[in-house]
Length: 380
Image 1 (cartoon, rainbow, N blue to C red):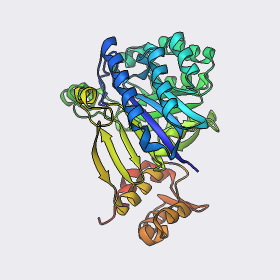
Image 2: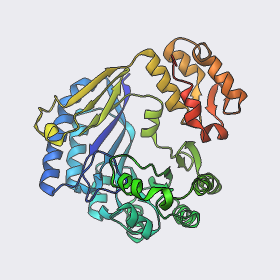
Image 3: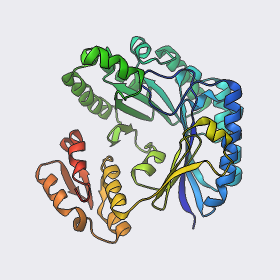
């Protein structure tokens, strides 16, 4: 029986880099994008021999802006992938989209290529907030793109939202939540803005201070309202920042949180199979010039302690928590033999709970998850 494999494909291009973005991406012309697709297809083809015992269960095209590619370019990628890799009967196949790049022609090609889930980066329904973020679209353009996705036939749509934005108020964030939930996307990812070093935002707000950002009390109110309103609208929180209607949890992301096997293709893409991790080169010129099968770098074999730590760090992000039976099966020892005292401590504090054979964070525990998870470092 073949093992399950998730595939990530990185498209490192965008029309314009957002002011808060620290992802591996940059603007590029059509000629450069087409050359990249050729190199990407070459890598996918060359690496296939290493995954003959696997079956692809999920595919995720991220970026950057994958929807910047033409429908034909994306179809070429999927043609090569399907030609050289075994697929399960009903794989989840996701493409990230920027509302400013959605066209009917692209969507039709995506659907024909087997894409059955799209993830649209809205971030905010307020056009002033979008402009401050450096987004290339408006709420109206998002709405037109969303409706086009429905018309073409997509029935599994995620919408990305962000809170604690510059100039954002509780009222404006609440209006974003109301507008998006009225559309009934199957999945909503709701993140709080993190200002990363090296981004334009970092320089802007290092100079302006935190006065332009919502204060801590407002940010907390946004967080609480996200849980309340989405819950009232039928969205189940299944991971710290992710909510879904029943049956629409993102299978691809669950693989990461549960430490399943995944392979990444494209610039800087990360992979992990069998406790061994590596990534691709991060220089676009190196990626384009290296032979098809020689783009991997930064190999690392995880120790058992590393793997147990990751099992807890990632698994506790999910509302289902960490299965005690699965931990025991993976590491040949009971969870309590490794983390019994830590679990007992945080259960006593009301931050962890044990239910139905699993350990999970309580609502209070989620609020201070960094504090809880730090205790799962071994040897500390």
